[in-house]
Image (cartoon, rainbow, N blue to C red):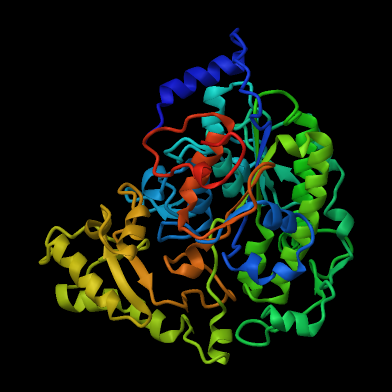
Length: 541
């Protein structure tokens, strides 16, 4: 499903120039005035259940009063941040929306491409050149604007890719952390230079935290043990609380602002921005439904650094629970929660720390010399068999064949596949011809959903379960295994029954569900479907 760019340009020009038009018809009575989409980065499907006993704020409200889907999964293999957020917002798989990963290699130039880079839209520097121009599907905010041009769409996150992709093509504003203590945007967005944003940044919230340390919230050791929260002293993890933010400096500097990304203060900062946007932009104030998308990224940074079972990851979630309740109370005063819909989910999970699993006598491994040596030795083997040449490129891709090559491209693909599959911890290597369409197996289906011909590599690696390809991070993600695909999914709306659904659903179903609640029609070609009929509420068919 490719966007009609001529239509977008004409509509955008008209809206920007203030073309006269009749106001849209008012939505039916009972239509929500504000949709709040919350994506908690790297939040696994089991975390809310596992830590249930300590939640007493916003997460508690959602768990007790919302409709939960216990078996919600991303149905694509490359479970990274960008494809996860794009799938949630568009109802399309990466094979349709084209955001196959955070980065990919351009086949023609060999250069690395960032999923939301857009050199045409710059504000104050290179880091601001961002936009959704590589997103090939429309998103929930776009559908909302199609039906009600008066609706307002805002997205924000610590990560630029999260904000940009949740906002879609026609967001009024998308904001992300500029790593210097301020939120930034790009000229792609009409509200990129909103006066209130500059005022907000001038308050220097993060700088006010300089000199403080991150102390763990107090919990009884027995309670932490029950929830299987651990303090690591293994692998690359030896630090413990309290955590200092920044280095040996007498004032807040770039190291401090960089380290602040990994502190709970970042979530506080983001929610302050969300409150300011609601107030200053008047979200939820008229009859036309608005969208506010918030991507919490601290959990991802902390998960990578300390692991998903760590005291640090647990601490971040407990603090987020408390801050979300404050935000919901703010929405009650600013909009009225009776007119608000909230959905909470995640862009992916993460693999448990391999050293922890090993200590428990469970399977788990981290990339080491054997794996690295095997991968780096593939081209040498090809040299021995077919003559010296540049056979492979990062991606991994096949390099253009030499004119005098004594092997065909298909033969080289198959031989490289065999060599890679002989490497430790490689379960299977998928070629483009194997995943260009869905097959009968679960893995083939997920890899097919991650395959976009113009951008995908020639080889897709399926790792063994519980293998961590990273040598230095405590944990990571990016596989089709359950720990990466399984995410929480909760819909909260007054009138929705607080039930737990156990039937499997997909994250591409989120956008169509929200669309049905605000009375807009998503494109017929998307892969997701509305889940509204699975949730009892007044007026539902």
